[in-house]
Picture 1: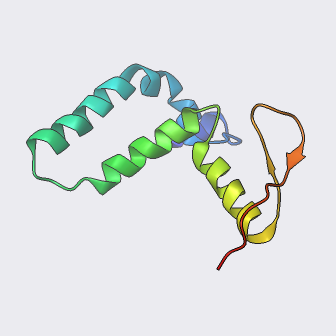
Picture 2: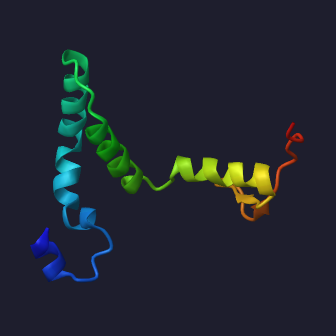
Length: 97
């Protein structure tokens, strides 16, 4: 990790330096998590969180960010963008009780 930052001090994320290794081994990591959860009686929140982080960072579309934008629109009429259309949108949400 130190070497990665020494080679590129402006590295945007450490995952960038290890992209080939992540791509090559992500399937094995998922199988490991499945095996530990399926065969063991262990809680593995850190492994699950790291898998979620890796998958989110590799995804071109972050679904959780879309959910957050919709929630902001519901509670404050902040608007949101859609993936299938250009422009800014506001929805007609029912009044909150």
